[in-house]
Length: 397
Image 1 (tube, rainbow, N blue to C red):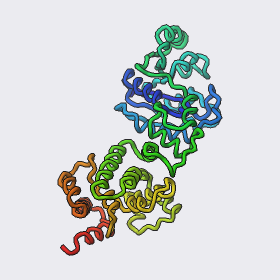
Image 2: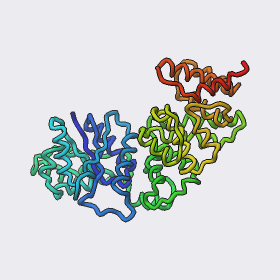
Image 3: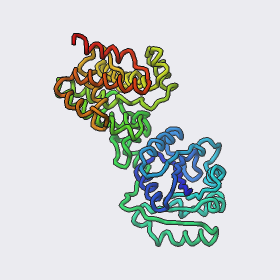
Image 4: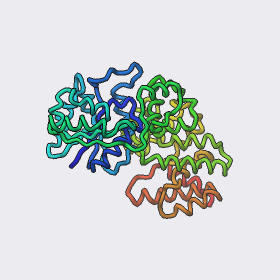
């Protein structure tokens, strides 16, 4: 297996890093990519407004989840777990020990490549891994790379590949941090990484999370979920707003509820229960055992207490998974939008999409019936609230 290893401070990780990693994966024909955030880099002084090692690690994890390179991408925290300076030779020893039969390639930018012979134990580095250096500016061409490449080959018998990244604009991390401080999402950042920065107030952003515009609210929400979930959340927002317009509900409330409805979807059971304790959420026996039921309750709490959403949004998120008897119009809209938004694909969904613009109650009832049938077929218990919601909508028939 051919493995690429891309280390760096990543403070913060930006589109330039991601473009470099993607190009290297293609050029080298990698089978796997490892991203390794520095712990305490020996060659750099930590910036005054830089993020902690823990925050940098989380931002890299978010970016890695969104890096579509067609191969597994793994984020390693081994440098952050080691005491002292983060020497690349030590990192390569650890990785080589873990996968001794694999071919390792160390990925780096021009500046690092040109000073590689001055690093700690360059002979160890070059004996354990090949080097792939990528140029980040128009001046980083063959004339700059060739002397160092030949020197490393002659002195260390190194394996060296140099590439120039197409259409890549040089990105200064210092300048990026300064623009973040001034406000707004720089185009060099993935929105989800930006959302993480806002949520944690990194780089002196100090955003008021209870008064965000829609783009910043989306960024915060997306930073809390996996990349594969984002199209669903976008589709739910689109559908909820259209339904609110059709049925006379508050469009802003529908949009906010849809954006945030899955914000705690990927927390594990322990994390969900911790939030329930923090926000005083009372759970029944089924909810305490089934993590999939909890994200609606914890997501509602985050929407209220972290993002300042009104009770109507809180309630819509709270009941969007199970439903309940006598739902408000907004609660019905989020429930059914979540169930049949454009990315959903199951038997009967087209019928549901047509019905919801003719008769909202009938559509919600049909959605509840489909949900009960599907859960029963899978042998999954149906929550009492779902059955009671269905009975409420079918009474009198």
